[in-house]
Length: 270
Image 1 (spheres, rainbow, N blue to C red):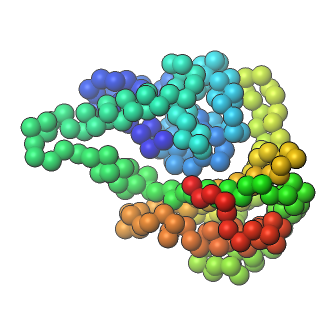
Image 2: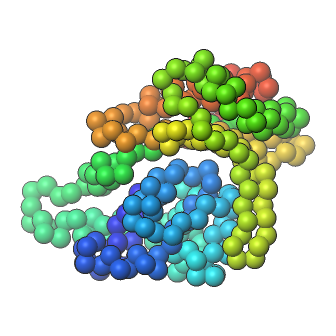
Image 3: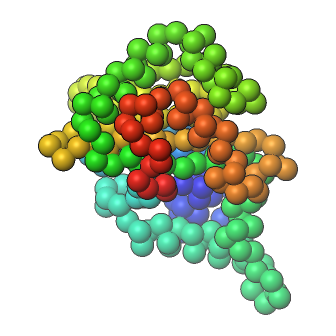
């Protein structure tokens, strides 16, 4: 969702941000709760209306039908807008091509064109970087998975205890300032979606999210989302897994992942 910071996402014409800042007045953005919070920072900077919804494209659809959301994205890399109300990979590619065309409009005959990497690094300089990874623990015993989630909910009632665990796992990690179980009230139909994931929010903007997916007879999947926010431009070029290592250590210690599941490693790392 980095390209949300470009006006060319919304109008595929050769314009400048300053000349068309009024276009943002009717633009609203939306992401699913587990998705990286990079969009939040951009939306706040550009004064865009912003929604955070549970996982599931239907929540985007409600907002777009009501004219409340123009562009959206979710944690499985799906991106789209209100032109079709669905995931649209071609639209995302065209958005990037339009940004590249705009960035290189005065240098088409030059020896070196502006690249996607350069645009992304400039984005990090302006907004900071959200290092992000997802750990999936598949086919976990359903009872064990539910016990782990119940433990995490109970643990949230005592932030001092949470922070004692955090500092014991890694003293350099920022302290936890809020913990909750995500709940969403749809502004369109008033419906309430409960138990949508357990969140631990850190003082520096980092997050840990735990979500249970599928609790049928073949076991459950525990999804752990780990996000480290880095504002220092000198530290935004690190390898993701290296940058996230301290927070990963905290997440596994905090959740007692191995103790509850018997797993020493995730099934998949994204």
